[in-house]
Length: 248
Image (tube, rainbow, N blue to C red; front, side, top):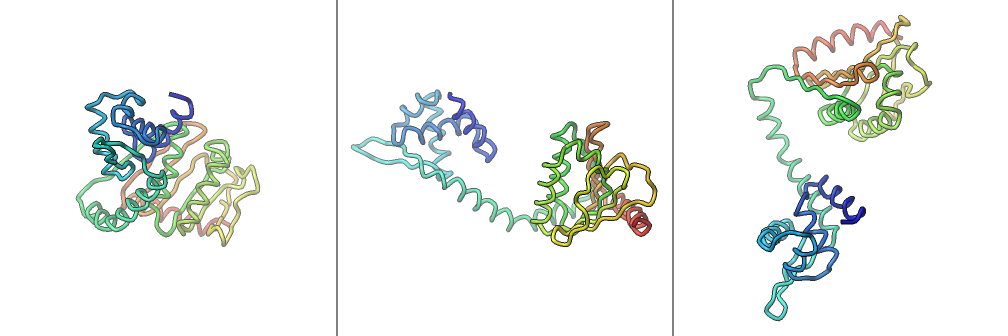
């Protein structure tokens, strides 16, 4: 396969169409209109596998079967059907999510700990905050660490998505770690910033939100940790509020 095709296949995998399904779909898209055998040869799958893939992709609405001269021909639908499928699935999930959330929150469970390593792990923690936070996030941020790792671009992306979701941020920082005069209090970005009265660096970042506490030690230990525990989150929020009223 070409580099372009490999890239397309990777992109399709990101939206749930992976492996042989993605290869078969790309071959059908490339050939325009062809028999099952022609597409199978083009993408390198067996005839039996090809017919199974036709059934799946037809159910997904991304290919159509045509009858011509008593023979079955396959034609790929316009690729914008992929976007419509995603939008339909998103709408269905949004309808279902409150019921699933109620089941999840009603189940008996103890605290949960999820640890993420490396830069991708730190980004996963930031995404976890965005997914779960509903109204407000309380943060104690080590700006020097975060600007070094995962970096300014990742932080700006986090801010943009948070603002888009309408989630407020109250943040405590240390002036000694503010290597850039950036991201001050801003009403449009729904952010209020205070600084600790002591000059000591914080050295680590934490977020408190919706029964969770997320911790990031990016530069030194290179990991992120999410603790799901309403009791622990309440304690951390109380400590945050005590620090907040004593910050300026």
